[in-house]
Length: 52
Image (tube, rainbow, N blue to C red):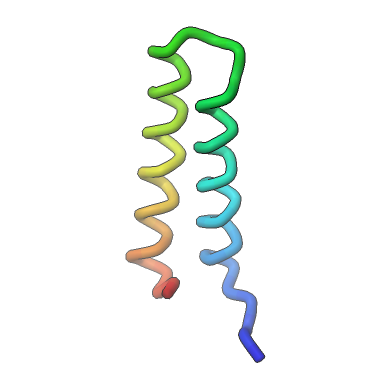
């Protein structure tokens, strides 16, 4: 059984936020900025939290 790691849950949530940012009804600049910000957080959580 897999243990739920808080950083893994947060990384998953930020990945979901990044994808939904791309579908938002706003300018391309804003969508891309929100996507990049959320993916940077998700990548940081994966590297620091030991998410596999």
